Structures are given as structure tokens and as C-alpha cells.
Image (cartoon, rainbow, N blue to C red; front, side):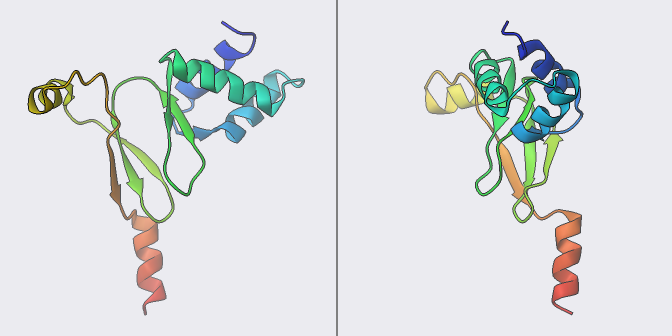
Amino acid sequence: MARYAQSILDIVCTAGKHMTAEQIFLLLKEEHPAVVIATVYNNLNALTEKGLIRKISVEGFPDRYDCSVRHDHLVCKHCGKLMDIDLPDMTKKLVKETGMPVESYDLKLYYTCDECKAAQEVATT
């Protein structure tokens, strides 16, 4: 594993939240002051390609990173807040339904979080 890869993997998998590359960079810099942001992006890409972490892309928001343990996400369509949800794995059902060899899927369910809902209610009163 590359010089900083293990530290980045540890940060992503122990953070308890979905972090951006910039957030990961700031934490890594505390431990390794000489690190540069390009190194973080390169390692995140390598870890994603190896299947050790997942990149979560939501249009209009920075990519975030998560451990590769299978789960799905709720995404607030207004602020981009991400929440993990545990739903049954649908891979076998998708293979049966499509007749195609589905390797994986990325399910994101969009909703309006409580904070955005409250802000909308205040704005309309």
C-alpha cells in the first residue's frame, strides 16, 4: 500500500461520517504535515479502484468517501446531507430480473431532511 494509503483508509473507515477529500486532507495533515492534496486524491482513487472504499457522488456536491461495507444512502436533495440506511441486498434479485450479471449497485434515495424542511417552512410563513 502507498505511503499514505493506510492512514487515509483508517480516516475514511473510522470517521463515522462521509468525508470529502478536503476533510480527509485536513485530518491527514495533522499526522503528516508534508502531505499535499494531490496525494490524497491519488490515494482515494487507488483505494476506490481496489474496492477498499466507496466514492459517493451527488450532483452539485463534492464527492464523499465511505468504507466499502455494503449499504445504501439517503440524500437530502437540498443540502446534500448523507445518511446510511441498511436495506436488504438486491444484487441477486437484480440479476434475476435483468438476466444480466450485476456486480454491484449504488442506491441513493432522495428526500428532504428535517433541517431543510424547517427552513422551507420558515421561508413560506
